[in-house]
Length: 226
Image (cartoon, rainbow, N blue to C red):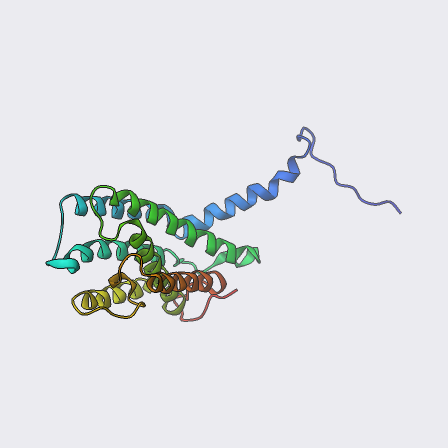
């Protein structure tokens, strides 16, 4: 009995087969991000960064005092977080299930990539003026709001992931006009408040873990968990 051997096609370069999995993996990542409209999301996130720069440069406010200084930037950050949450929605569900163990990594990578891009765009826009609280407050407020969006995408579906960030913005707006409140309304706390930073970080971590393990709820109302 002789063992069957595999031969490379005539003219194939030595070791060419070894690179096929890598090429297939990159193609899978690209197709996943395109199916989640990641290119369009990146364009919107860049637009939110430009909008923040314009708002800070021309000193846009909606009211007096601290609330007026914070509300416009918070609204822009909320819009960026909503874009990330909605980008978890796929019109055809999750055909990447056929890839087995790759699906959670695709979810995680897309969420983290868009979050990093959003923060970069907003941080760049913040250099056009004086942002109340500075970069630390921007990172804390945006990360927490993005985590809320991811949690809502898991619970309600990617198409409705914007509900969490928008609801939180309304709560924050009310809180900004009142006395100091719980650290869970982190945007109303000082930029160096450790409790607020821990709460925002915990929400972002929970959202990231949830979207990685379970994915966004599909339009049929059933979980898309792996």
